[in-house]
Length: 171
Length: 283
Image 1 (cartoon, rainbow over the protein chains, first blue to last red):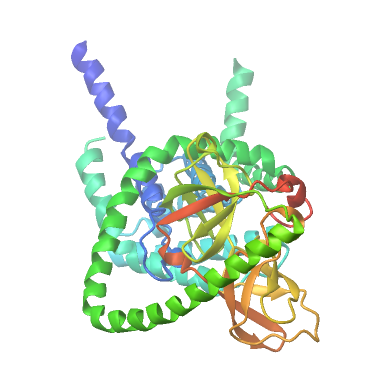
Image 2: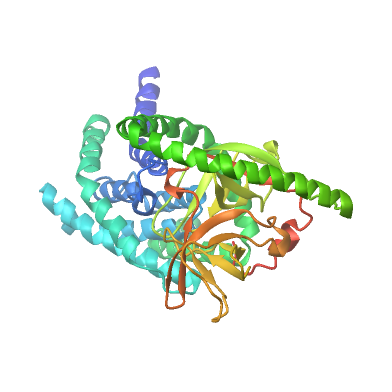
């Protein structure tokens, strides 16, 4: 009896790992790094995380969870409420509906898939911000951010794979 | 029961559409009733302060260490520059002392009523959310420390923004470079021309509503005009950096990427939020 309770607790804890990693990265992305021009292109770490887990464990990061993560990020960053939620839900939907494409065997294909997602997300954000502000916002900064996020993806993908193997192997 | 299952199946089937609609609805709501969203936002931000505070400290320490190394390599050049500047400032000090004495005597002649004194609240920067479309920072001072919405935020030599959201422990400062920021300013040259400083998410905000015949030259100081009653007259903001066919860029006094501590200032002006409603388009 006790064993099964502990076992269940353990499983629940493990299945929270993707969410925990995402929230941690979301907070980490907000840390001021005092690098010139960094704030503008601060990489979208939460997007990487949602992308990875939506491919490999869509049962643990559901669309509603992606939505909640987006809302939290909007609340903390001061973005219009719903903006990041929209981006993450769209990302999740694209990934899950085209899962056979994204669930690649090689890492390079995973990276290529992320390129589509990250530039798509930049465009969606740019469109939404422009519509809310009723002006055409400059697109360059968004593209730079997307490029930096893409460039840093391997480092964080390595982290996700480690977490995946450490906590979720037998689940 | 079957109806419930059917409903659940329906929700699951359209969950994507529902979530997208909810996101867009929230954006609309935030646009229509910002105060409602702001309230929720400040509560959530307050809850995350301890974590943000903790993880921002190592980054600040590392940045300071790097800066120390850079400073040591430049210490000689900087020293000679500072000597020169010190000599110049000593002259200015004499001028300032003479003017203060003159001012005092003139004020006593006129029975001048001085402006209310300002109260300063110091705060540490814990998060710069950034991204390509936002320029705001979170600082560790809130309602309990006396921070109020609309207060000016100052760092070092100049104004950097104003408080747009206050929680119990935190405040969010909208920087003057944000696309939503509008500050009534005047050119501190002989013309004293009034204008509005508008952020555009770049590092150098622009001057709007200057009449075409106004004379502006690179190097002119830009200070707050006090219009609208939100800020006092004469807070330094920046200097004109470039004048190119009607686009006037202003370089801010303070490097906004290197903020570590800011001061939130309560000038005790009567305008407050009443003055703020006059600035349409401001979050």
